[in-house]
Image (cartoon, rainbow over all chains, first blue to last red; front, side):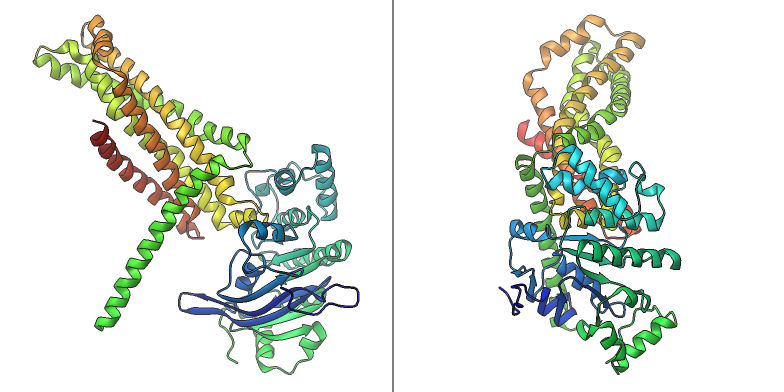
Amino acid sequence: MATNATTSNGLRPNEIEVRDLCRRFGRQEVLQHLDLGIPRGQITTIVGPSGCGKTVLLKHLNLLLRPDSGAITIDGVEVTRLGNRALDAVREKFGMLFQAGALFDSMTVYDNIAFPLVEKTNLKHDEIAERVHETLAAVGLDGMEGKFPSEMSGGMQKRAALARALVRRPKILMLDEPTTGLDPTRTGAIHELIRTTQQNFGLTVVMVSHDVPAVFAISDRVAFLNHGQTHLHGTVDEVMAAEDAVFKRFLAGRAAGDDDGASLAG
Amino acid sequence: MSIAGLIERVGAFVLDGITDLGDFVLFLIYSLLFIFLPPYKPRLWIRQIRIIGAESIVLIGLIGAFTGMVLGLQGYNTLDRFGAAGALGTLVALALVRELGPVLAALMVAARAGSAMAAELGSMQATEQVDALTVMAINPVQYLVAPRMLAGIVSFPLLTTIFDVIGIYGGFLVGVGLMGASKGPYFSGIASNMDSHDVAIGLWKSFVFGVIVMWVCCYKGYNAQRMATGVSRATTEAVVLSSVLILAFDYIIGAILL
């Protein structure tokens, strides 16, 4: 079920549409009637204090969690009531970079990146090899095929994980805290890589990040969540110019290194 | 605490227990079902049979040998008091094939491979590798658990057989070689007093123990809390629960197939 109008070229303006999403864990209502539109071909960064529901929202977008109520439309398909087989078809449209990389530590970089192709496509051995080398080159890791994840730095692991997320040429890329645990130099390099990759592959990118305000430099749009709701949403300029006391306090807290995770009072 | 509050807490406790038990049983059903559903992954099956079965052979051989040697020693000592040392082979073989072989082999594999399996799956869960499989549209139970279940079902009866054979020769070595029991009656006693029913009981037990160990260890690892202490707790619980269930089902199967 489509929830938004189409544009003149027949495409919906939003690749992902979230409507009235609610999710409760025990007595804690983590997502409270959350609405959000993720435009096609842009980088949308989701920010907010710890515990505001960013990661839970991302786990709904990548279909790891199902909501209690509400709707999520991905590329025109309403996914919240789909069965497992139909969900797998939707999952083929996106790649996911997990916070810790989630590379399989018993496999080499080559095997990790080839894994989705080996398991989910009928490509021949040499076609897979070509695609893996091409993707590794795109993230600046050519020559690292034989390494195991444990033999690589944190930044290189993130690059390899990004390569695995990209190897099936997805339309949507989801990133969960892609620079966590990296020093400022590597953080900048990963940000630049995300921007370049998005442009080269024409991806819709949804990113959860704590790296505020540095991450705004590569973002097109920002969604600021608080208490399980979208508190602010717009282009980076619009959000930065908003006279919103809660967002200003969040930014000031981040700048002062406040990472205690308390949600901000409205 | 008010009466209503107490009832609410007891109710929540009971409901949680029933939900957990349901998850536990469903996990077994899916693990077994996915063995028969495509896509088939013979490479993964062989790898798990190597890890669970082939790599346990030395340990199983050692434990089997020592168990048989102890049975030979104590068995001869006891039987000789009643002038029945000729029944040593029968005693050693029946004890091993019906009881000690399946139970000790299962306990050893639970301690060696089961704990490692729970830790590996728990660690994969903690580092989001299981979520990564799901996001790639690969069913984690089918990819990670079903091959282990199949490997357990194949390996446990084979390991138990190895345990039994080495144990019988261990008993022979000590009972006949060191203690002086007669060589002939040792094996002829086994041949005349043991039948296929005794062997079948041992093999049925090892089959059930294989399912139990894989089920419990995979379930505990797969559902480990996503932290270091969660993995260590899952590993401990996997071995303890497997061991308890092995001994409980040893009695149940023994009573049914007696």
